Length: 493
Ligand code: FRU
Image (tube, rainbow, N blue to C red; front, side, top):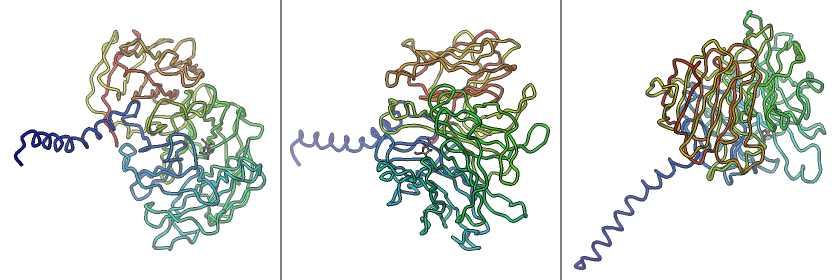
């Protein structure tokens, strides 16, 4: 080849081709608003966490997923796995819709004694129990368009087979009949079996089974209890130990709309569960998280002595119009639920799971008056001196800001001037929570499009998504905050 111009051109083309993958890679990493350490789907739509189960040293996280669009559609169960709740590996889609319907939310259990007969005693199955949503049925005016069904895996969750006689719990003529949360259970005669907690319109139904395939109604709860501004969804019944050592049962119930900040939120009840029946201790309405963006969360199955929780970090009010481009929604950080008591009342505390400490990279002390934020992914920790009020102001270079305050017994996060909010009229708002007791410490997690505030290690929690036009750059603290530290948080997959 003699022509020097042609040689230069070919060298340039060759160089450009070699560079191309790197450019694509870099732009994917810097996708606007993509969280750095919160779980997000690789692409497309995500809502509720589903089927969380710990099995053979692996945490499984399934999730409501529509891979072909960034808005809700035919639901699949997306799938990811982790050994530490922090680094997640995306797996192939686990369960896809079929002629019986979309695959709605549900749970998964390890059927260790092969009670279902879907595996063998040498190779017992992982069993997923989900809701079929017959979209055509709903659109044609039927009321029995939701039913419970089963899929199982004999290779540690890598591939899933649907049970050939689905559904296992057909609908009984009630419109909203969904989100089965199944757990091991012992019948009153000592026989081992399973308990399903199901959201049924404006109440919870409890079903029992010996084999995961045949279900019997045990009892109902809640038609005249708790908050009822919307439909009840995604329940979870969790045994917990009270500070006095007694056993209590906590029933999580997500509700949409009707949350304390408009739209979606998760309420909970504390009481007893005896002979298949839940009885609440009192009539108090309790909320798990006072922020607008923690919905449909439930706990992991098969983690003895730990109630590990993750929620969908969004709100049905605006989830489908938030300004992200290739994907929509993230999960909260993993949290650990436990009971604490304040002025004679039992409440649930949601602490950041201790695994989140692994995210911490370099740490340094911050100046109260004004400090720079070195990255979008940080955790701030501080002690609160003995005073009623405190405040934290987070700003970027173009004057957008979030203000966190505690005053007059209210903890508030003001995101009304926090940047991009014109996608929904209710997004720019102040979200307040009543906190009558003393606040001693705080942990604040910031990521590219969210804030999670934990006071007293989760006695009060506010989770809020944020879409600043430019990244946060500065932070200021009130005088009564001390030992203020910033921890750089590492990237996950
Ligand atoms: C809650 C929910 C569930 C349902 C799923 C459908 O966010 O409405 O009740 O199973 O989402 O995607």
